[in-house]
Length: 125
Image (cartoon, rainbow, N blue to C red; front, side, top):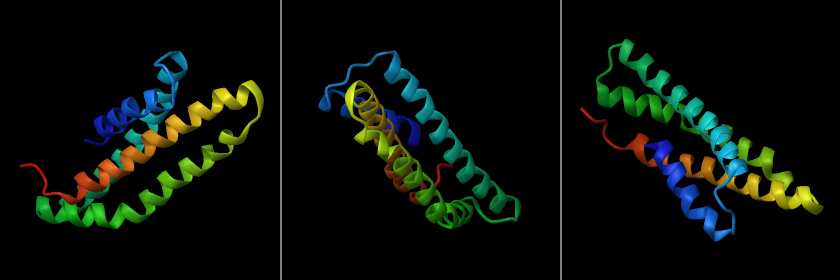
């Protein structure tokens, strides 16, 4: 659910900052998708390792998600901080990269919010 949450949040955010859905936006979506998928794989592998140890589905999901929550949160926040200086570039590139950095940071933040909500809920049977 993190990927749809991130992209839905970005689609709601784009008109608010006056950005159209163009090739540059799509490129930023692809980069953000890579980050989101990588984070989801990390969480999934951690839950799978607990399942291999014999934990029930619910216990594995709770233990796996809670164990990885802090490092994953800091990984996502470091991605946001890495693109933050782009917001302060002057001129044409500043305008162009400002929108890209804002969109990417917003999508990654939406994933963080969505994954926090969905990883703490009960697992689907």
